[in-house]
Length: 355
Image (tube, rainbow, N blue to C red; front, side, top):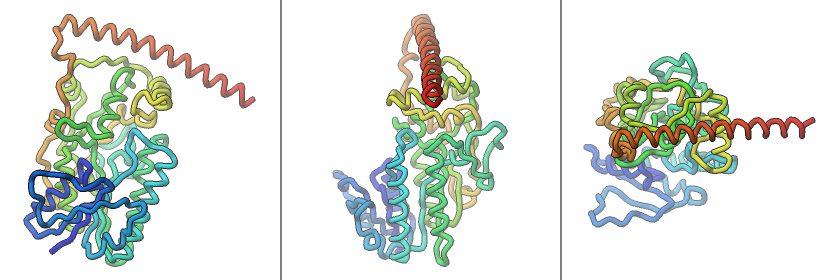
């Protein structure tokens, strides 16, 4: 019997990984680990699943991982919309504790979650990006830089004899009536005052990401794998799916200033470093994962529709909708000008103070 430990087992992806491993055609014993208490369910839990409440920051991880063939590390302390220097170091420290415990327990395979955003969003990116593409994370996007840092740590661990490390790079992950943190951040930065450019987009259903984890555990895969549905959603199609939305186009530098101000004062989950990802393509190919036997059950469009509720504007009469959109556009224009003025004044004060 194969034994798999899943950390972050009560997250949106972790729950699905545990469920799919428990239903696997081969016998798999699953140890579901989470900081939160085990779930209370009226349905009987599979006998092959054992829930353990543990904080990775202080638990005896070597004992927790003892006897495991694979560890799927999904526990995370940060998201694309929340990141601080303290959180960066905490997450890296947690991964290092996991890696040290894996070595002590003699575990041979590790799966870690990264992001397709590590490739960076740049003009002229290949469409799609393969795993052989260089990592060029946008330098002011701290979350993407952190993902790449964790990748390097896992890769270094996997270079020792008898070990293998799977690094998954999914696109934006969503599920029924649920926008993942990344998808929510991208939607926020595309709304209101948005930068010029509409790249193609990809949305991955959490069920398909969980299935990818199961495939890599079964294969004991060593290396990097993109995770995304086939193809992508073209800009025009995405605009039709989103329906009428208030949006004012502005130069990227102005959008960055607005994003920085909104981020600084906690008005939106849109760090300024994410702006390029709404301007340039960063869609990825899934050929390498498909070659392992994985196949997405949801297309990009299906995943998007499943995760988005109906737009309230779509229920309004066309004339009323147009009036509201025009009014919102005017307000956004005034806000953009005001923000630009504030940004210029702040820069001037800083220059004077430095003189």
